[in-house]
Image 1 (tube, rainbow, N blue to C red):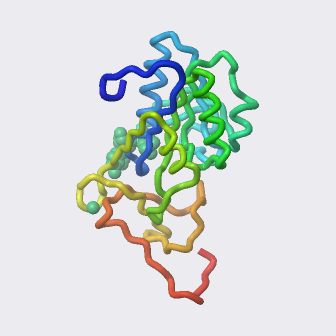
Image 2: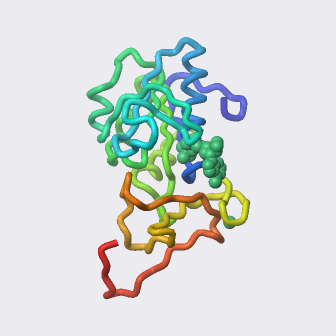
Length: 203
Ligand code: ADP
Ligand code: ZN
């Protein structure tokens, strides 16, 4: 894996990137291969992501799925942990609390392979939740790109749209299932309007 070298004992892998960059596909690919290698694998996913398949599966945008245990905190990962699992995969890690950093470290220290996938940046282009820390402590980080829907270049930003218009800087970060939508865009095509100080709306 990863550049042809093999890690021994426990370690942490992070799959980071913009929406539609194939993080869930890559997580599932690693999970399937670990299963083929007869490893005991447990998959978790954040409660906050309920797209397509519901809470009990990780699904990619191409709608392939694997079974997953839903969690909404790092403590729940430990509570619902299969003590026999050798490989622990966690999707949508950006939604979890900072405790996931300790949890991932503890599991790796106990010889587990820990794979975390998540958005490295929010719609503003700023670091998202525990992802920066996870990327710092991981042995291996893969940063994936999507295709910019505006220019066709490599996309590194998630463009949030509300009613088809770029979402302002001060709109709430998490609105899963709301009427807003997201696109993959490159740095040049990514737009985050800033409101003047003192101007307030409910967005
Ligand atoms: P992520 O977990 O990073 O959001 P997924 O693994 O769920 O990504 O989905 C990746 C898939 O999304 C791609 O294989 C492709 O079929 C589809 N897709 C849709 N829009 C785009 C885009 N703008 N760039 C790249 N892939 C896209
Ligand atoms: Zn672009």
